[in-house]
Length: 493
Image 1 (cartoon, rainbow, N blue to C red):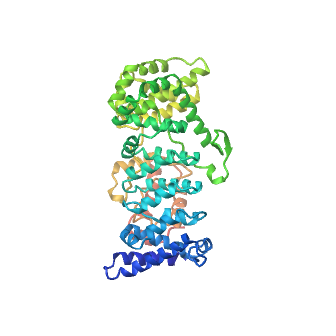
Image 2: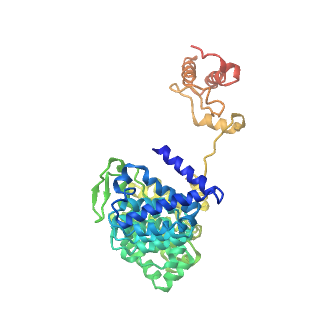
Image 3: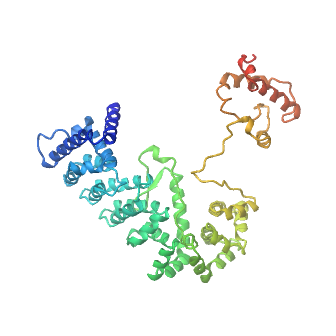
């Protein structure tokens, strides 16, 4: 059945690229599909093409793939055939979520045409499950980097924040939180000026992101939100932040999840018990130091001096442990930006946190300090400062490719020496580390590896790592990996 679907999509692709004279076949096909969709809205008994049973058991659902492809290549054809009108009419048909899901997932939204109108109508439909499904689909569009999503997509998500169903609203704010990692989406959200405080913890977290931009900082200052929120974080929210992080970690390390009421419930599926990711929540101080205006406000309040003085104190009670964690998290978020790191340079507090990560007698504080050093390593300045303290960081993002040696002759002697030094010879594994190349890997079969290991381990016994032992093993390696003539022979017994 998949073969027929691929052939059908190839046919639509061919017709959309054909001359105008040939495209009449495409127009006839789309007009026929639109006509059948119209029978669904008319509730005719003869409309057997798009019945629920047909959608489940036949390939008629692929007609929506064709419509989606045409909406990307030739959206004017859908307008000519009144296909968009039929799709909008289906949005009002009750108990046909199967058709609505196909419509949402098939249409193309990269162009400012009626596809977005259809999407917007389904987002505000009367069916709660369809509103939730369509809201989740907006996350798919966000991650596929749909064109101009920061404009129309953010606007649709803001609308979902006021949905009567709490699950839909929480899904929308979770997607907005992910979208605001891109500055363009964050600025678009600030322009919308949404009401967020009714969404509790996540609403406050998203509102905190506003102050990382000059426009949001000015807006929060005009609303009188900035100073009051900073005082709240200094007095109590820093401690609540520690509890929030540790609650997320506790959820990740167990087979339970946090329910809507805040209690722990067991996960229903075994697969969801593994690979639970925990991301660092938004911190007010970390967002504040993203620009100079926020740094000036923080200096004016004098919070940094209070934090650095407390870190150097000795822990005497359990309340000190919580306060120490809260202080470390606050300083770490301040140090996560170049401007904030410059503010902490004179106090030399990063060195204190590094010492606590290695030597503090309270292990939970050690773990907090380690996470703090990871935040410091977000910037180049932070990486260099940690390197001076003996903490080394991996300086690459998930978009960077790892360096791979593809040619043995091109690898430098220093690299080969480093590989040997990092893999000392032992009695259990007497084969030295070798940089494999694209030309070597096909010939180095499992039989050759086994024979090489057998021959090298049966060599004259000598001290592991000695020059004599290393020379013997390297001779064996060169015997099987040297020139083409040696490779053509069978391995020795």
